[in-house]
Each structure stands twice: as structure tokens, then as C-alpha cells.
Amino acid sequence: MTSSTIITPPEAVVFLGLGQMGLPMARRCIAAGFAVRGADPSQAAREALAASGGAAFATGREAARGARVLITMLPDSRVVREALIGEHGVADVLASGALVIDMSSSVPVETQALGRALTERGIGLIDAPVSGGVRRAIDGTLSIMAGGEAELVARARPVLEAMARAVFATGPLGSGHAMKALNNYVSAAGLVAACEALLVGRRFGLEPDTIIDVLNASTGKNNSTDVKMKQFVISETFASGFSLALMTKDLRIAADLTTQMGLAPSQAEAVAALWEQAKSALGPTADHTDIYRFIAAAAKAQGDGGPSA
Image: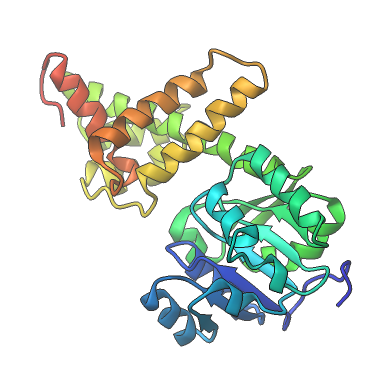
């Protein structure tokens, strides 16, 4: 395979990170006919990949040796950089002309710096973060935002399409991560608005289901009213599968990006600050739909005008 060859089955695809999103995404690639190799510190995750037909390894270097395509699905930019070009990074065991696809939620400017470092090693990089959550990772209907050289994005498209319903070429390297952060800002702002509407409506005497039904039949409808409020907030399960900590990280990326682009102060900064307060109050294991509990508790602390939940 040359550096410009389109990635098609049965090409080997390496996954670094087999967590809640990485594992089902790897399974979609297996189902599409790719020869998937994966690495994760979790033995359970490795066993799950092996049971699905993939080859599992304890370290990234073992999984990546000689590979021409590698996907990172890791917590943040720092972890991605360390995994690729750190002391035990995998970049020096990849095949010449390999392509790295960073599907993590990373900082755009750090992605650009990583791209320059990998280019010096003869390795291509695109950023291709995802939206849709665990459910859509499982059924292969994610939305993917792919940034990087057009030739590299085209080269990666078949493997991306194995995991997605829609793949958007967003522009230069880093633009996928910028778009992901902006998407999550809009999503988080919509969730906060829906939670506040639910809280106020309940205090006024409206039935929770009625509030959401009306929003979903009206101009207030958004992703949160459609797939989160009844399912995870009104039900009080707070188990969407996407953590409050990860949402907070993405919101900080979006807020910092608005500052870098000359828009300050911004609503993105206000939303990020709210979520950072929620993370401090609720802890790192909270689900992102737990933001409702934080908003309700804050309202109650300021003076109860009725039921807060």
C-alpha cells in the first residue's frame, strides 16, 4: 500500500483505546471486514475485542508494529501525543507512510502541532472526532468530522464510513476537533436550557412529560429534549454513557477557541464555567445528564420556591 492508497478491507486497522466508544467502533470495523488490532490497559476490554474477532495487545507498540493505519480513541490531546511520540510512543514502529486518525476530542492547536511532529517522521495525521454517543457507536451511525489534507481524508474515508452515518470533511488539520468542540458547546447549552425549562415548569405546576412533549413539538426541540430529558433526566437514571467530565473538557476547548478567535467574553465561556462548577460539585464519575441535579441543587440553595426536582 502506498501513502495515497485508499484504506479498504481487509487492511489492518489498529485501535489505541477500547473504552465505551473505542470498543464498539472497533467492532464496526471488524464487521466491515478490516483486520482490527487493539490495545488498552483494561484486560476486560482486550478480551471483549478478541471475542469479537479482533487481535488484542497489552501495549500500543505491540499492536501498532508495522501497521499502516492507526486510530486513537483516547481521553485528550496530552494522552494522544504521549501514545504517539512519547517515550513509549508507537510512531517509530508504524510502517513508513502510515496514517494516524485521531478520533479523540483533542485541542485543535495541539493537533496541528502533533501533525507537524508526525510529518517529520513520514506519518500522516487527520483528526476525525465523533458525535453520537455509545448507542450510535454500537450501531455504526456516528457523525464524524474529519480535518486534514483532502488526500488523507479521502484515503481514510472507507474506514470512517464503517463507523458512521455521515462523514464531513471539515477543512485543514485541527478543524475536526474545532467542529467537535463547537458541536458539544451547542449541545451542552441546549441541555442546560432544557434542564432549566424543566425545573421552572415543574415549579409552576407543569407535568414533566408535558413540558418535554411540548418542546419536542415546538421550536424549543433540540437533541437533549429529544433523546435525553425523558430517557435520563425525568427518569432519574442519569446514565447516558457520556461523562460530565468529558463534556466539560470539550466545553473548555470550545471556550478557549472562542478566545483565540477574538470572541471574548463569550457565552461559550459562561457555559464552560457552569459545567466546570458542576464537575467540581458532582465528581469525575458523574454522567453529563447529571447537570440537571447540579442546576436543581443550585436553585434550591438560592431559595426554594417549590419542588426542585
